[in-house]
Image (cartoon, rainbow, N blue to C red; front, top):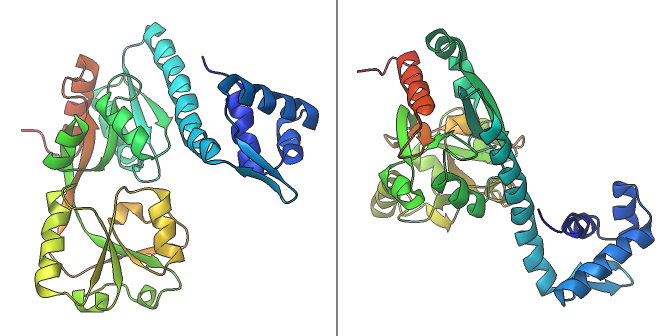
Length: 299
């Protein structure tokens, strides 16, 4: 499916040396070096700078490092899709899950869903929450993953070419480091955020976030708004390491062990629900109807 030398390349890049990578791969350092040399020769690019302090990725190496992770995951997903296509049991709902899109809500509803659809089964499909994965997975729901639980609005659904079924409306909270002065509070006021750096998803991603942004700019300019492009673990780390404040929802309380998610006294929030294909299969339609009934939203 893909050149296995790519996995060796990733392991070397993460380890920073041939010897450490060899230990992790249970092969000899010379075998690791041979694979990297063959990969560089085959691609006609230099991936590492060999220094006395260890291995350093070149610009080309850094570029391939990001793409290789995606290539390997995509190939694995393609095998999963092929295996799923062979399965005779069509009553399987594949639920994508990541730290920012946990599947706990559906797990809590499982007994009620099972009562409506006793022959239906769950298959949890973990994925890395990256911009590339978000574009690929959400635009192709129904292939490898059927549904994902998460926040959304019409802007995001249109951007990602998917559909959504709202299950609840989640109030916006703020996440801070457990060492931040605000972490001592159990509820925040807008005034508590004065003088703080508030990390907000960039404009035009969600009109719910933009409504809050406009309110803060107009009436609370003592809050310093800092834009970011995508909710990922890097943003949660940035919040913790930089002693910043991050716009969040209560369902993300367990995403980062060193962050505390605190409710805020304001009337702003965002829908939470299930993201699915605009043209769901009959099995997915049946599942969505069962979920809607389980949460008391059936018409």
